[in-house]
Image (cartoon, rainbow, N blue to C red; front, side, top):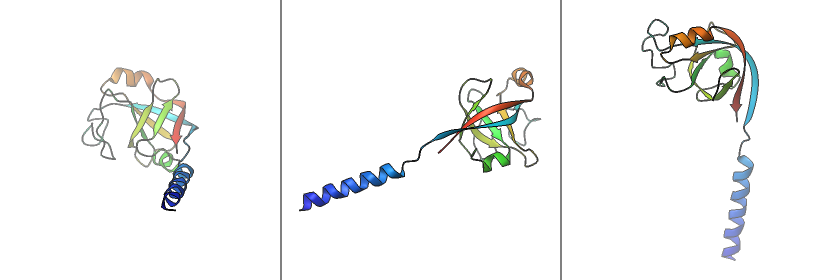
Length: 129
């Protein structure tokens, strides 16, 4: 009898764990994409620290997002694909409240690459659970 109870309990736990597993989905959005660098004249305070307290590294693909995008699911550490750029970027920073529907792509210390990117409308995909 005890073995049956243990087996039943394991089956119930397996069902609960499986049914609670969230499916991730890529959502698409068109935004304005700008570029920024780790320079004191482009940032507030320490150019390597973000508003969420993360530390930026020039070799890591990071972006900052406007506050309205946070409400859409682009929260801290969300994975993002950006049209025209390779790889997956991570949301590590947030922008001033005055900006809407905007991302700021981190180009490390490469000011030339950031200027070459400039400002453009881009399609992004972001991963939400």
